[in-house]
Image (cartoon, rainbow, N blue to C red; front, top):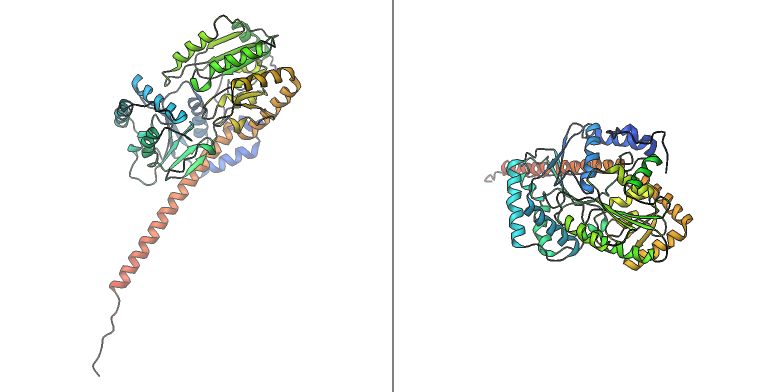
Length: 448
């Protein structure tokens, strides 16, 4: 842990590109400005379903201001939805990630009704539209006939083995977009007719959740939650979601605590667009009943400093997901030089290099075995943590994310220009051929 002179971190501020130079280097920032010069002044609109809770909202909170700084008119819009709408989209989400048939006819019908309401109320006139995940996917019906407008569907979840009815329903929308973006190559779909890009999510190393903290502040957070600073701490930070397997985390910890005196924290918040959250939280609390060494913390959204402190105080960090889109908490933890034990699913293997930055596991027993190993080998755990921090610096920071979005916009614009040029060229050829046929001189025959 790094220390600062003050016991309390200063308030969070909006960062400028120049602030990242000491981390990523001047050349990276110069490249970003060069990319942006080619699309300066254009309007880029991001649309998702919530401003609080989950990695998508967190990324957009950081990314949109940086887009504005480099000269884009960047906006962030939110669709409206009632409880039934989010229950429907959660069923879509779970069906896509698990392959289970969870959506009903009522789910599809209500989704269409709310989409039509949003279409009537929203003005989506950006040069480039980023539509994030299934909830706002139907907004593509709003696209202008203007061929210069780009629509990009940004999928943050695992659709590699979806339930067919839900995927077929959504794919009809997706194929109307100019491109789809996935977090890892394994999520790409061979049945899509549009270009597909891979752009991994990212963390902001200067945000409250990731920047250095004074040790006195970290100690205060540990005291607040009655955690023992002298005892090894195992932590999982995530939404209360069945896909994060919080019950499995508790079961694995119990296997470890039988042999090593340690403590577990399961901390997370509830997302506005996830109606299952409170149900999962209640089951997790029940599974931990009677255990003073297991701490279940329901932390409000935007408690970034406390999450940061808990991660920095941890000996090992878990992300025992059964299904995962990407799992940004893994990158957050690696950035803090902590070894991570995580489920081998979704985008996690891009972050956890097995045996180098942490361990990938497939079941409860495997997670418990790796926890015991790292607790008994602190030198190896420390080395893995340092490897992980450098891995994130090179691959999962917001500056890389911004650059890939800019390059993608440029690529799609150039492709569209090429198509329009090709179409005009073909039209010109056809016009010239028709004109030549119309003006062909037929030789006159003269009697001898």
